[in-house]
Image (cartoon, rainbow, N blue to C red; front, side, top):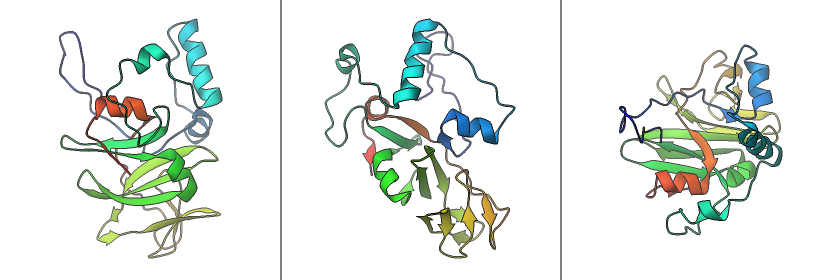
Length: 193
């Protein structure tokens, strides 16, 4: 959860920043060509991260399973989720479920949110559904995300790219894409939708 666990800053928490979109490096790099990335510390870590990227699913080693809290049968430990948190609550959504529907609407951390996922990329994002004085409702079609109210088309980073709302941008909600076991360790009381 970004909290320091040792040293002089123990207990302090980093502020989470969000681009509104979580997904593959290639897609991010295409949209943001000047981005720089920090590399793996050593060859073993580099192989681990390469395996994660290549397979998009690495089984959990037994020594990690042993540290996990009480099993939670709502999802497999290795399942991918996207989650949001506040000081009072945490909510997670299954990326497998999102892959089937593309768009979900929910109430989380005191806001009406929309969660978008494109399994072909794969990219996921969480946004506040409010735009000025409107509460927007979205759907996913063959061409991407569209809102019901104005039939405007939206990119996966929350920007309206055509229609009445072109040029407008939804406010991203800080989100984490991770495995269910990791989310549950940090947020044992999380909701799963």
